[in-house]
Image (cartoon, rainbow, N blue to C red; front, side):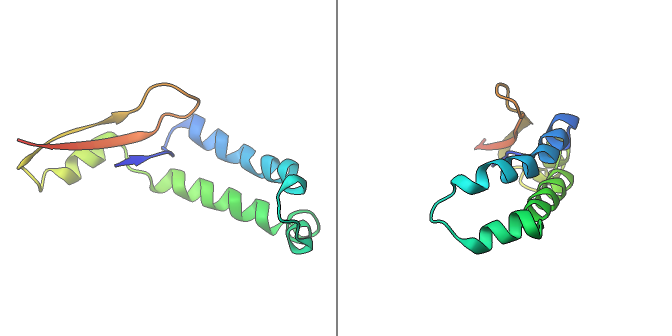
Length: 99
């Protein structure tokens, strides 16, 4: 299992920039739809939904310690959890191998 978001300051900061990306990239999305322009620029519903979804995803992502605690109910596996290295974000992972 891997989760791209995390409860780190960098992940939260990234989510706060996502509405800006929506505003910048919307005109280049295909197929063209007037409704997309309306809901992005006139009524900024799409950027707000993207921001809400990103922030909530960061809050609900479990830490490696929480994942290991949850995995204790399956003692027939050897579990490893942590933050993946590299890139801007540090995804959280959980790997289980049979003993």
